[in-house]
Length: 162
Image (cartoon, rainbow, N blue to C red; front, side):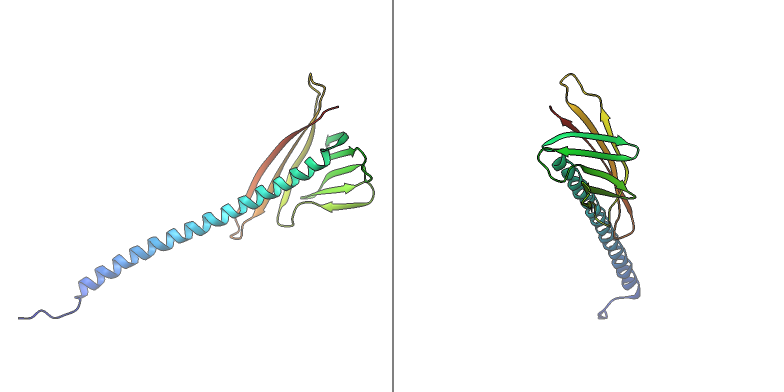
């Protein structure tokens, strides 16, 4: 007696169940990879934005004759040698960092997708070397394309040697 070709109903159900398990695992892995990629992209954007803002403050303090840091309100005034737009003023305006150049213009430094909170400029007493010191702290926030809130803290210390 010849056996008929094809699958029995039991074999078909077993194959469908195995296929469903494999497909569920693949979908879960793809979702995890997409979520991880989105989170990493947001973290990279925050890091780049923070580096840009700290770079602007570095630029202002390079060749500075003097600076005054205050924490309430958070404000940094920088007088540069041979600079026509003195003073340079960094100040928080809501969730943005603003750079004012004398009494002429002002620029919003962070992008519209990034919010800056907890900005603080803190003067540190001069040490034995006589260098004027200042510390800056701030937190940047953004929302990923999937709606997850991401944040990163930044801190840097600056010295003015005379």
